[in-house]
Image (cartoon, rainbow, N blue to C red; front, side, top):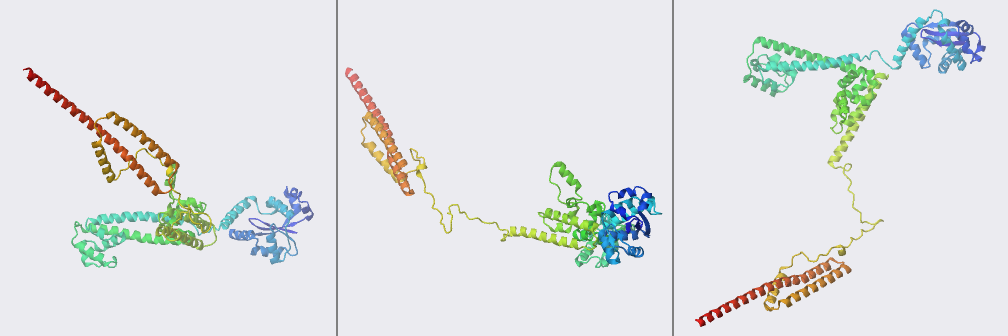
Length: 566
């Protein structure tokens, strides 16, 4: 029986000398404690060495997938004719049996034998030392791990990090140079700044025109697409309020314009290079958030592999670390987005839905980055599908908001019918309204409501007539009558209040009539009291007149007596 053993240096075939010892699995490890005892159990029959690291990597990857490589098939056909082959992987044994028609064996005793072979490998294989086996196994493990992670050496994201950094620096420098050109040439032709707003077009116009006096004779149609701008430029050049500059000054200004145009051309080339590298290294990330945002995310994360280790919540706020820690320190709301805010999908969303879309986009971006870094595919199918889903979600959110604002059937609020008094059951009518309970009212002694004008006039005439006919004398009898009248009125009021409490009125009309009657009954009483007061005043006036008459009469008598005495 032969044993197939894989090593970092190649494939080895060992011949089992004593197959009976394989029956005692528990004591098999004792046979491999020393190299001399191990040589009594197995011996090396053949060894197939790998030519280079790529050959070793391809053979190892096929062995992992339980497939024999081309070199292994030739090696086994040469040395395993009519022999039983012991393998460590049962699936590999089945593949060898199907393709090479070699009987294969796999059991627990063979696994114990493999452990013993691994322990005494350097002693059993001549020419393979421990100092050589270590670097071989390390190199093969690194190569194998790269292959398992689908890491391609072409996917070097360092170029992306450097390119996006240089692109940002170029934008700053271009902006600085363009502002310097505008400020410098503005002394000579200040009106040109408002006419030509684009920096590149401004530099081209200045380079072509030079002195503003040359603008009338030049054709700016290749630079300025609009004819109106060209006519405005020529008219403004004639009536410009700028100062005159020398030819040497214009020469330096033109050289600065050359620098601006050269930097702009190089920036366009760099952007195309960055775009191609992003489509090669991270196609799904590029399809989802764009070249610039994707490159900035990779640069901020350090590498594509480091970015793939981050969760979606971290990718969402990547670039807003200062705002995050400031919010945590001051216990305010944390930021909703960082670098991902500049993606086109978030730009399309309204301010109300930017948080939701950024959270969804960050989750999809995390999946796309992991697929780009660790997946074996090189297409952008996942990124395209995710973008379509996010666009659909954004449309649904915007449609809901539009429906609420426009009052559609979906967004219109439901109007509930007030059915408090409706009885249960089909076709039931509403219950009648409850009747008014006058017994719950509090009746006062005197009503404060005004009486009709006719009754007031009648009561005044009656009072005046009684005052004239009543005798002036007998004040004591009137006082007694008044006391009696007041007691009678009180008794009547008590009786009426009792009657109203015992017999509550059901209808509102009857109640109004009773109130009118009570008012009419109380009015004469009030009028009578007022008449009595007037009578008292009149009697007092009459008494005063009598006293005055008596004094006058007595005075006349005294005068007569005095005259008679004289």
